[in-house]
Image 1 (cartoon, rainbow, N blue to C red):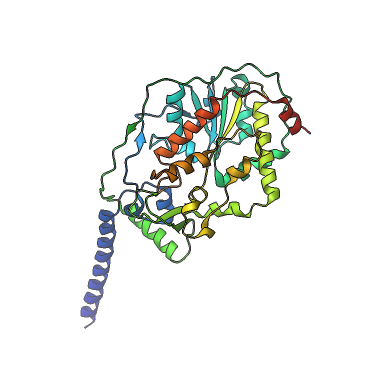
Image 2: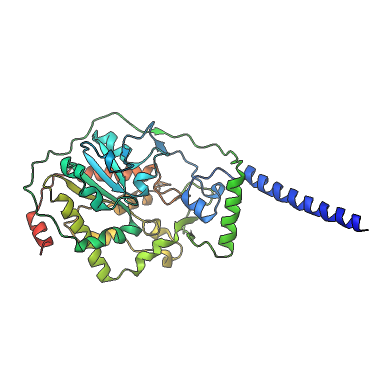
Length: 366
């Protein structure tokens, strides 16, 4: 009798183990390979949120990402200090820098703002020895306050005599982007990914993982994913809504101070390239108005001395025209359309000749 009970117990364990194996490999066959940061962090499937229209890509990246300050060992026309919109798109090869460099023919080095403090770059020996023509500060909107407001207390160096700068000239042709083939709907066949996905799903179900929000939309057509009337966003986008009027004043003052610090060498032109959050750029299409977040770019533009590309207006127009995947449905970043539009906005902004305004710097030093 005891032997029979043990055999049944063993049979039950074997069945349960086999069932678990079948579930894991069944999901591995069903799930598409992981591609987006929002699907990965939130435990959502690429089957539901992967883009289905081709993106535009390049054969190779044209810019250099600095591993350390020693990589900044010669002159570059453009120095970029940016986050994931500038540094984490290498594998996709449709970063805004590729579009920008193919249009202008300039050289560029990129520093990761998550690894380098702005002052590390602008006070480096290389920056003083080889000042760039342009300094682009790129940041996602939700971290703009933390990355710039504190500069309000940083003194501006004594301004050097402004040096003559040539106007930005554009290349007439060459280096066009090519269509990127759609990834086939293949299986991921990765048990580790499946187990990680199941863990993320369980955390979300039990409200232990609230990093990604799933927001309903009024309409479809904004994204090419199978799930057409919902949008994934990071939860911390809503943190902007607690900023007070005093915080916003400090933000504008800090942004202007950072701009003045960089331009104090009399040669380098500074410009902000801000990536709006999905919850602010897609706010007209959210089913629940309470899900929208403030547009910090619109507020920053109240300081008309800021060199600010209005990416919020540029991208909003394209979304309103019916173009899908300006932002990727499975990701917090731009699709190739968004990268191209941001680069065109930057080119158009820099193509307008600007001079140093001594009155602005004097105001900053008061």
